[in-house]
Image 1 (spheres, helix red, strand yellow):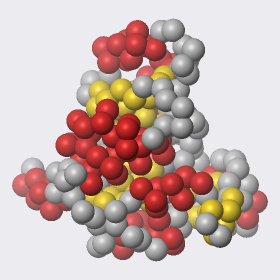
Image 2 (tube, one colour; image 1 turned 60 degrees about the vertical axis):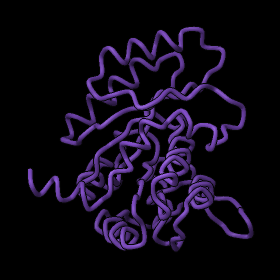
Image 3 (spheres, helix red, strand yellow; image 1 turned 180 degrees about the vertical axis):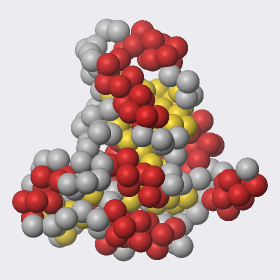
Length: 238
């Protein structure tokens, strides 16, 4: 099952969770990959100029995809997508991203799409990130960065995802502040208030090895391991 991965904010752990899900899915399928259609902030990685998250996602994938499929829009300015695009003299086009997504589908059995920042982000003067998710017809997994303020950020994100008409199929609690003493209580409070299932809790770890994190996301891996053809048939039958 293909899926869109969003987060409660920048730094919530979307890339770590997406990389871990790729490792978890590799147990079920030999050809899995992740796209990050929009990335802001570039550096040098193995002699290439690209975004760090894009480099990490490409490394974790078992299916090899061309860079222009993984990351159609790469901007130098490390800021919100529409601001970075304006600085580069570019307009982000949802249709172009959808086209690249369909091309990437032909080379994969499961394809994850990682968002940028949080949920309520403009892409251009008319469209929001939610318009991209709806154009791709993808269900959503929310990565909640568990720290002080997580209750507000997470519950507002859940409300926004549902209000935008998107399907939230689960969420992941990612402990991002080891000094926060109420992490488990916060996760429990969220679990009591979010109808979508908690697909895993990621403990804080220096460096965040995605192979280790994958063990905490087995439930998510099993959910997403459903073959794409079966999901599409189920939607058609429904």
